[in-house]
Structures are given as C-alpha cells and as structure tokens.
Image 1 (tube, rainbow, N blue to C red):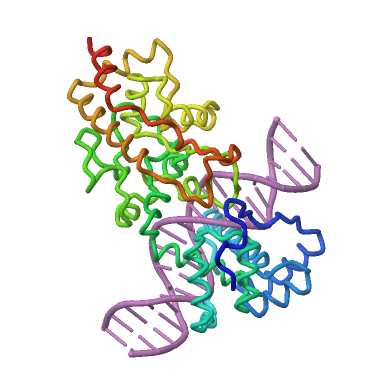
Image 2: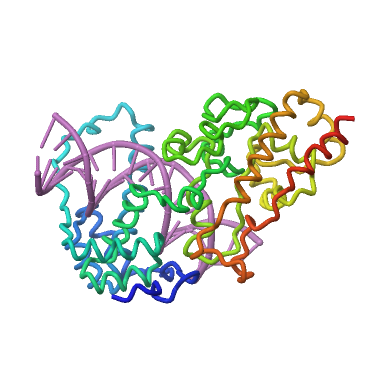
Length: 351
DNA sequence: TTACTAACCTATTCAACGT
DNA sequence: ACGTTGAATAGGTTAGTAA
C-alpha cells in the first residue's frame, strides 16, 4: 500500500457525490424500512446491490429515516398521550454484530489515519478495496478513531473548540434572546471577567474541556472541522466571540481583521441568534463600551492578547488548508493583531 | 432563489469481546 | 469486572440538486 502520498489527494479530499434516489429506489427502501428499520450489514449489502448504490448510502438513508420515524412517533405520542398501545412490548432486537478486524486491516487503517484523519470517499473506498472492509465500516472506524485518538500534534488545535458562533445550536433551538452583558445560565463557559487561564479558558483545548462545553458554548465540530474538512470550500471560520466580550472588543477595534469573517457570517440578520457579533453602528458602540467597567476591559485586553496568541500559533491542518491555494484561503490566516496595538487603542477609547 | 436532503461531522452511549 | 473498540444514535452543518 502506497502511503507516501495519501492517494494524491491532499487538500482535494471530497465528499461522495450526492446522489438523488429515484422513485423506485425510494419505494424499495421504504418497503425494507417497514419490514426492518435496522438492517444488518449483510442486508444492507444486498439492498445496495439491488439498488445499485453503495452500502454506506443505504446506511445513511436508514439512519436518517430512523430519526424521522422517531420524531414522528414522538409527536404522535405527544398528541395522543392517552392512547393505549404505546407500551407495546418491545421485541428484543438481535445483538449487534461486531466486525472483527484483523491486525493487518487495523494496521492499514492506522497507517492511513496517521496520514489523514479525515479521508474522503475516494480514500475510504481505496482502503476498503485494500482491506476488504466495507467502506461504511471504514467510515465508522475513522469516526471512532478520531474520537478516541485526538490529534496530539495539531489535532487539538485543528479541532480547537472556539467560542460558539451565531449558530450555536443550543441557543438557536431554545430561542434564547440575545444576551446583553450576561450569559445564559446554561452556558458552561469560563466566567467572562476572569483573566484568561490556560487551564480553564473558554478555549480550553483539552478533551475534557470539549466535553464539558459540548453543545453549549463550543461550535459544532462540523463548523470547525467540516469547514476546513474534506470539502475545499471557502467556508469561513464562523466561530464567534463570547457574547459578552465580542461586541465590546469590536467596539474597541472594529477594523481588526479578527472580527471580519464573523461579521460577514452574520450579515444576514435571520442567521443571527443574538450571540453573534452584532454589527455596531456609531449609536450602539458607545453604550456597548460604557456598559463595561474598566476592570472588565482589563480582562478583555488580556483575553484578546491571549486569543491572538492562540491564533498565531495555530497551524491549520495541511490537508485542508494551503496558504497558496486561494480556494482554501482560511480566515485564520488573518494577521493577528499586534498586542502592542491594544493598549494604544484602549487608551484612545478610555480617554 | 429556495426547499429538500444526502453526506458528513462530533459527542455520547451501547454492547461484543478479550483479558 | 473491566478495558477496548465496533456500532448506533442524537443533533448538528454543508452543499448539491430539483422545483
């Protein structure tokens, strides 16, 4: 197996071409779903053959439809909570099958993983060919591997959990009003007005930190990883700053490149859940600043400097980002603010 | 342009299996 | 019993395609 160049696809890993199922395929899948919403690997393989699509596509379809069905069932139960029959005895499902990988197969996968933690469909299929493992199992294997083996070299940085952006699901779904100077209690974020502390900062990159902040203040992984992931999209870093400090920081130095992509992302007000950086006009800037005590600014200054340092040190995954490729131009390339700029700007504002 | 949805992600949990 | 790890699920985003 030639791993010298990961399939010549560095920076070009693409997702599987999206297919559109035809009516016959959909009907067949629905019929099978009625019979058994949890087909095993072999069944999915047969179905794949029959329908002329891949087994992992079958798997994806079934996953989605199990979700949909659960939603429907939930709604049904909610509406008809008095109805009987909801407690129909559950048929004991057969135990999960567990693929037993050989050592050689695992070695191959590990080797590939070392080169590329996010293999695209082409890579996965090549691996499938070489190992004889179904592509969908390889996909799962990589998911598990990523979860259990964080990238010690750059992974923690590459998957840096940054402050949540405007699309924070937790807040989006709960429809939290835009916080002004306080955080929703549900947000497990480092108290805003404490000095940046590498051990407990909002950018705590440790795995524990990620877990703790899961679905609260951290961006969804797909926002960080997918954005630079196997799609060479121009999608920008859309992480946002703490709802507390972002507006204030922006008020302090609006032209700072750090904030630009964030604003760009939030130009559509409909996308803005309130946590995003608000575009500040002249009339809103002053109150934003005035609401902050000077001691708060001291924190902001520290936080900003610290954040800039983090940015400056961060080296994006080479696979997904290439400085020479404008297609993959990454917003993190932005020149970090010079820390020396901060006191200067702060003085201007505080005078 | 917009709605739909396949493809993909992480985080978490379940469970098979070897020790 | 416990650790490892394959599999499944929940809850998201992204982006291609059809209407």
